[in-house]
Figure 1 (cartoon, one colour):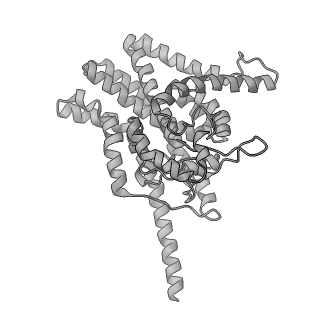
Figure 2 (cartoon, one colour; figure 1 turned 120 degrees about the vertical axis):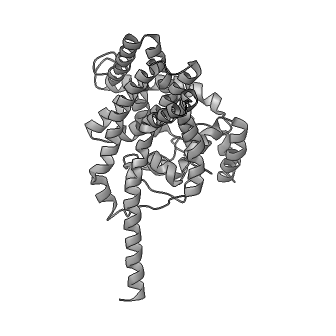
Figure 3 (tube, helix red, strand yellow; figure 1 turned 90 degrees about the vertical axis):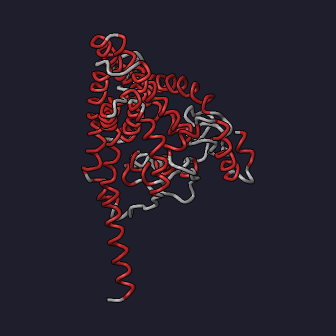
Length: 379
């Protein structure tokens, strides 16, 4: 056998091993579901439950960014002709996301029972709600993967998961609004150049909620139905949220309501912070006919840090997702032409919370990206 043949075989074997390792690395995405329990056990052992109740944000936004830098990046793309068809049909990848939905529902109930047990102080209880809410925010990412698919089980599971964090409108607005208008002034989820997070968030909350109802009403009117009818999917999903909220309130009183709606607020706020960083300052050019250019990998920030990519079901390969929205998470690709974030999402979320620091890091990158087309920065 020639040296060249050995080299080819060696490379093929290496790719196969890396893809298998990456496949099972997605189990890391299940860690947030058990993290509160692990931290609670550690807190009880150390008699510091009120400190450890704040452990989830410390792990997600403190420890993970450090591990991200240590583990480095992953730019491996599966082969389109041989590997992608096989990976698309593997049940393993769907089982993880669907299992996540069931596990989070159980976590929500367990988290409430734990809070009601009285083991936390007021500060500790607040930390517990924040911690569960961050897990819920990661759950919205799972729902995001599910609602993009065609199978009813997946889309319904995604809608149910969104209902558990009171953000069902995302199912409609994200698919019919954000993906249509991304990186244009018409999109509530695309932050503009020099816009601070705290200016972006109130607009995102309100516009996304209103847009979802408008889009659903428009869909029903086209079919000859009234907006306020049983066919309106938002009514169904928000009814699920209301029923869960009422159930928690009846079972646990005001504490149940505070827990359910509090963790929901933290969850959808985390989602909108991620929306803020995913398209910051990027614009689709307006063509002579008045329409915007087609969405490409250049209209979303990309990040290839391995740990946060498997932790977030490759959400950070956002450039590929927006260019080809139906691609499943396991086959999303890295594109060299996409603008690259300087760190993974966990670190970038923290950076976004400090606008002067965010602008100092990100504005030069946006400006460099539009060098020679500075007028784009004003659009």
